[in-house]
Length: 285
Image (cartoon, rainbow, N blue to C red; front, side, top):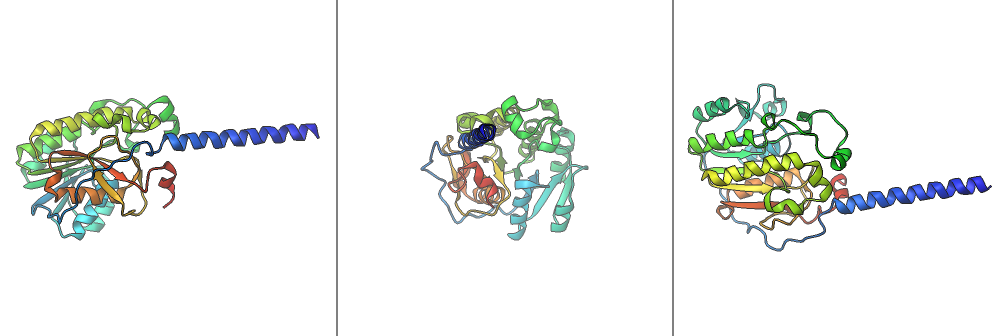
């Protein structure tokens, strides 16, 4: 009887400890610590009538942006690598140009052959591009695996895109980066900050390069992504300490809204969703 009692107490202690750890993790990975009060004012935005190039459009936010622009009847082209999976782009009937963002000459070539007036870049390192290692939870405690910056598009790839856009006279550039860069560093939950350290460094360099380019830019920093449906509550705020999770489709909506809103030019925003402050919301939809 004593043995059963001891085992029961041990199991209860384990369960309580597990619940405590999970609860602490969810709190540490939440956006409850700061609430922004000032947001970009909505307007009857008009997207510039020109050719729009989407970089990073084979998946994620970039693909969502393409879908929405096509629905609006815009002239959209996707820049893809020769090895990219373009099945969804083909199904959408999207025009494509082939170039590796890391190869400057290829990027210059596609810009010189096309009159792109607007560029939207969601370009960045994806999980499948990183060397194999421990799972994501472990990476937040041990730090992100290091990777040669010359093989990552986060800075070099975006720099090549920015330089070519500038050289060829593009008049608008929307850049999707990440919370944690620049003055938003302290907005990112500590564990995520550690897990994405290498990405943050490269993304910040790309942001600064864009600011110095002279292009009419808008920088949008989202937090963690979900594949859920739009909450209808996502907004852009200039408050660098804001943090929330957000659906990819909502980031796409915000990017397109910013594109046609002159008030967004030359500014850096956080993509904020008051309905997505807690990590568990990522798994609700």
